[in-house]
Image (tube, rainbow, N blue to C red; front, side, top):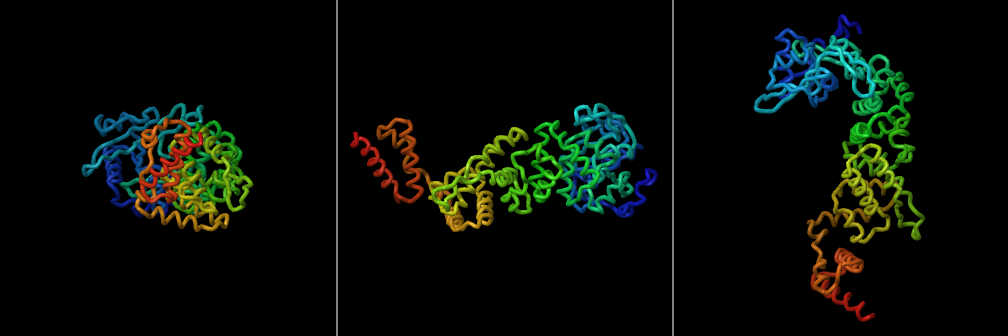
Length: 447
């Protein structure tokens, strides 16, 4: 597209792209207006323009300008600005609008130097709007919008690519990837989120550069993959990660993709990461040959895979713990030979009950198991909490009063008592205490 007339093929040039919108949008508009009034060029930049063109509500607004950071701080004052990346020309402008706190990042148009760490430029040079657009990652993210003139400014063909449902790197895709290897994952995330196809040249560059993802920190990979797996189009994205040769470097334990049967059963909705991880590792719980073919016993291979993923992606312990809860609870709920309540109930005490129930139902559909047990558990869980998780009738203090000392036998007796209570062997606390007295007498009599 001509750098002389970036709106020549602009279908939004003659109509406002943004309307009154949120307070944050109004705050961004005021920032642009004040910069323009002082003689500077200022536009909305990047994701907010892309989202508006897709008829989505932008989450936040960024402003790009030819004013330097020092000039931005002069316009808005030291009390309303904060340097958040001044070495890269970024200043945070903050304030209040209708008593609401608002803030917008204001970045100076720039070109980037080399990327020796594969993440950030070693230096930047202030530049024009067109040069700034050319240094960005994908065409759909290289758009500007002038809220004063109400026109989109497109130096990179981003609007045409949006119209063609295409995700394309700006300029040389190998160069864009070499600058920041995480862009390979970002390409797939954006394509999945907005239902775009990968441009063939961009796809080829990703495939041939895939091994370079290992140079990216585990934290950044984990954050990007969390976004990919939590969004609705995760199944396409996961398959695309394999097709582009990325999965072999970031999650080899989860290959091949076509064996992730339970993952493919997940609904096309937003889901939290522990649930998705649980579905991905479920097939690794290959069943040991049981004595009763209707009573499957899951192996622990899935736990090994989760631990490896946690180390590689640097995920919080809480995420992996919750994924383990979902795996174990869903196995118990879905077992084709319904388990006693005392075997299921403890696995539901750590939360994630609804999510585990959904996974269990998907397991039953996948393996054509009867779901009568799930229905029974649902009815029990529909009762008040104190009925499906009652206070124990026999506690450690009862055993100590009876003269027992803490130890293996002590714990075994407490566990047995809890199971008998949950499974309805007693109907009152008095019956439980009578059982305890008998259980204590019997070993003594045997001696």
